[in-house]
Length: 287
Image 1 (tube, rainbow, N blue to C red):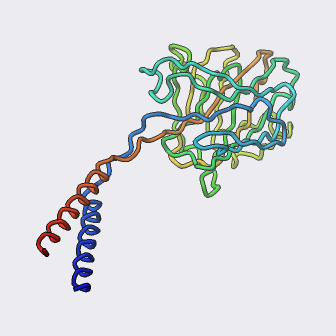
Image 2 (cartoon, rainbow, N blue to C red; image 1 turned 90 degrees about the vertical axis):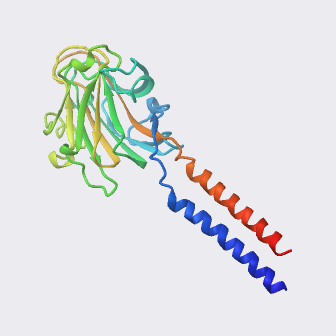
């Protein structure tokens, strides 16, 4: 008698398990929908010193490692909050709103040499996905930023893997500016002689530069890579000829998906209920 009851209970359990497995096989979870883009938190960036590495919060606590490799005496670090105008024709939906940004400032003294340069390295615990963006504002007055980006295997990501676009940012009409530009070139002037760690064209993915000798607005530009990014090195050149005080602001925008569809769980629950009803029916029949 004991063996017979045990066998029936084992069959009931197997039926319940099979129902759950079947529920999984019948359901294709709906793709996660992006509802928001997260920007890194630049709090504390202003006090980073040369040679220092510090962790910043991004998708998780302390998951963005930033190293200041070099900073000229006329360059200062800081943070800023930009209120990007509402998304529309010239601002993508992920950009709109109040965003905290990393800030590089040049005081405009134009004494030349290494004082006008800076080098920063960013390492991401979770590589930036192909849906992520590198965001920059306020390129003007002959500023340049050479970018070396690396995939999770530490291979340099080539120029052609990046898509470049302009947006209004904080400035209505800013997307119509024909500068700055994303160039596949080696910005050699000043880099090697000023000991900023520049090592030639094989080390750069591309170069953002604005050759206007004017102080313009907070229009934005952004880059998107077709390959995941685990590390980025920035080489900043504040200016070459003028005494204009310059600033660039930048950050990284990563999509945050919604949870997967709850349909799977609803079907599993229904499957469990069916198994329970079968168990009760079999129990009545055995009486």
